[in-house]
Length: 330
Ligand SMILES: NC(=O)c1ccc[n+]([C@@H]2O[C@H](COP(=O)([O-])OP(=O)(O)OC[C@H]3O[C@@H](n4cnc5c(N)ncnc54)[C@H](O)[C@@H]3O)[C@@H](O)[C@H]2O)c1
Image (cartoon, protein in one colour):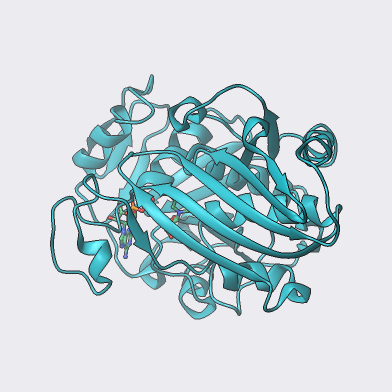
């Protein structure tokens, strides 16, 4: 059975999902919605500074994207409640604007006639949060709204879950992340002053809600998880830097053996393990939520440091696609 999908928000995540889902025979994209001009969206789908030119030769005319089979209606409606999801028979909305992340706001898609809504971030506390590879079994067929977490939550959740197998007391996380559209290219005003600084010029600390999301998933770690994030002058890619205080002394070799085993079993496809001397560009297009770099693991008594790369866009959309496949079969 074909899943009829609409994408709300054709930004970095929405467009990459579009490019990837167009290849899936079980999925039909029945509409996309964004505020930008349709010709501009078609252009950005054809040419991408990170993932290159698309083999799809999409064009915008008469309110639709043409060039990939049946024309796909291109909508420009800012209010989700007014979207024609009922008429289009939409099974699932991929909510990728980053703007409708509370239950009340996201459910406007349901009121408009969609069957289900999948956010592309961690939503508010009243939106069920499940992480693929960790607790996806919690999702029920009757659920109509899901937060799959953000890219950093996916990386951290899976690694914390694996490290819990060795016994952890607490964890400090530093997420080194490429810049995003929520920063400025040149200095400008921003409610968060540092986000308003030129993104390609500095290492920029930004506030994140990772601790909060992790405590929803690991409530027993209350008071024992802390995180910071810095945005760095690359357009794609991220590196999670984890410091675990273990219950007992260990060694880098023991930690790596444990991580490698997890990557080859329970977490296969979601967590990877490598000893290649990688840099962030090398993980462009990598589908893992965390690719552990075993060459960087170290231990000092009960303190363990480990590092994992991820492609914040491709790795993340890989999990969104996992969710689409998983949810349709429930
Ligand atoms: N970029 C990443 O690395 C990344 C990774 C994981 C999750 N996310 C999350 O995904 C969400 C989107 O991030 P992004 O990087 O794709 O952002 P983006 O700014 O590239 O895209 C957002 C898009 O939404 C559109 N939009 C804004 N308001 C709209 C409205 N009312 N109706 C329709 N479209 C509207 C914008 O025009 C834009 O094209 C955010 O919540 C972000 O946290 C981003």
